[in-house]
Length: 225
Image 1 (spheres, rainbow, N blue to C red):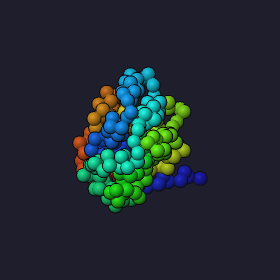
Image 2 (cartoon, rainbow, N blue to C red):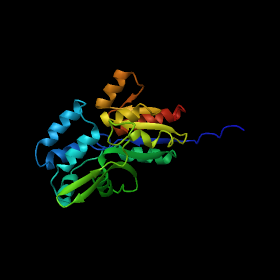
Image 3 (cartoon, rainbow, N blue to C red):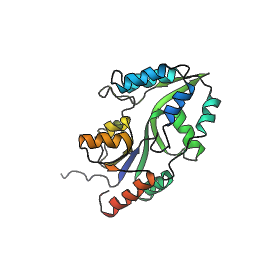
Image 4 (cartoon, rainbow, N blue to C red):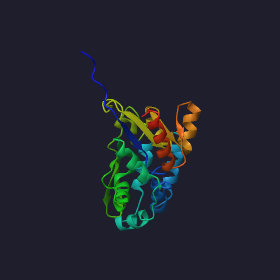
């Protein structure tokens, strides 16, 4: 009996901080609301490879001191890449599927999207529970086979979650490196672009999401999606 045909179409997985947003939202929250400077030592240890992303983020988030209204006022200033709306429309029009995958936390990401009428978008992120002037982080998408990641983004599209559709990944930083190595088509900027080029992993450079949409349209016309 012949093998069943793979499903047509494509899936887009996109990072949040500094990809959908202008600047790194989580870094800004940590810098503004940390009770002391211990977050800096955790960052240094993570950058040096002495601890993983999960240990780093867990310590940093547990060090925050702010009420939810204070977080809300801060998050009101977050700006989105002007091309994000065009990307959403392109994926919808062409029958694709868009998923936000973030090392940020659902409480923050969800609030930002809801304020902009985008609460319908699928988000996979770390979890955060408010508790007075503190927050309690957890990591539902951790992967014991990938201890360096707090949120192992590739698990959303590798087996058993590979459904045969082409995977497009869009990102900018260190948390995007693992999924970028497993995607079919990668759009990269900033540190992710530099690392993928150093590893000779095929990728497409981009400046902003309007640039990504233009290049996706070209790939579609060339029957590469």
